[in-house]
Length: 480
Ligand code: CS2
Image (cartoon, rainbow, N blue to C red; front, side, top):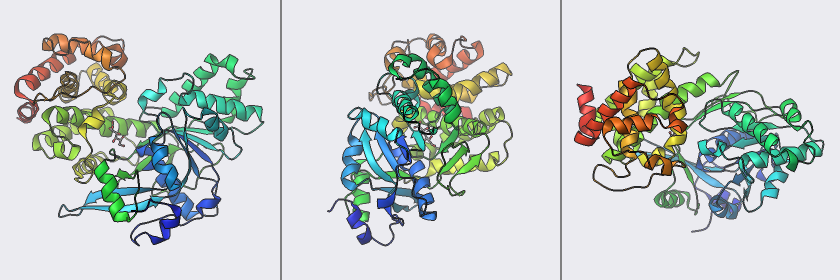
């Protein structure tokens, strides 16, 4: 089978959507740090649509930068940046179906550790207008040489030295106030690396005056591509695509319109430009991601391997729906355009998608980085208001149970988390009260306040049930 390549585009099956604009004439207006599956199924798709709708505006090609490995480069460079998006769901009778689209807007690939100067040069190029990021939650802790934040600072310093305009720095990670967080990291790096920058004088002010850091909420479920997905997509395409990406049909992006150097003319069907993204981030992080993490830990322990397999368990679906409705939604204020019942129903439907095979273990990774914004703030708010947290506490107990490193059938798995060593040194298999206390006192996740006694008792009771009866029976008992 021939490799996916621009020369082959015309020969693809007619059902495959493909770039309808002149790829060869795109400039590199966007430099994206962290060119993983997520951004290829989200930002790139929105940019692709804009290029199709406004083919005369050729500014918005993407330079895709891998922050660690060369795997994306190795897959996509021989394809001249082309790759396939497979949008998957099922027909009403349950038959899985997919729609294929070859995306063309990624026009160059770089591997940061291999050629950091090339990344800096792309950021400092006159045509660059947006530097976007998907570096995951843990990426915002790293600021050393070669980190995303460091490359940005060096790129901006070069822009300034060349007398170029500032640009938009756009975080697409699942963090509250992601733009503000990025700005803080960038300015902290400037302070730290001051001496390394040629003209440190006034640099921070230059950044603040010339650059912008819009916040945004991004939402699309993108499971990791497996080898069998590669084969299935390649077969349907009639060409070998070394790394297609998969996604659900749903896609949402609420972004603040603070692009100092222009932006693609996004289709309002795909992108909502909002004055303030924070309320949307909160809705999304607490509902979509918060419940997702619960499904992941409960599912991984019960050996329900994927989200759809887990949510097909009536007891879990009932718990998750009640968690959203009774405990999480009341922590969220009214928001124009957000209708809670419809949002919840749609969410339950998204999780039932049988064609995604989104693995619980994938979502379970990096818990220490995800849980603070997903669970801790709403937990604290409810506790402070004296409201029950029974269902939220089950999530904490499930994570604690998960940290023992083996599921209900005794099968072992690794804890994939930057704080794994510290977490594993907690007495996770000790007396439930002690285990709960120790976890809730784990500052990097739960903050400096010691665990609330009510929460500790709840978590301990759930943990005892999870250990004694297992996930399914614990959920069944909660339904009574
Ligand atoms: C998931 C998210 O892996 C995870 O932690 O909760 O990646 C989730 O699928 C997306 O945020 C959905 O928009």
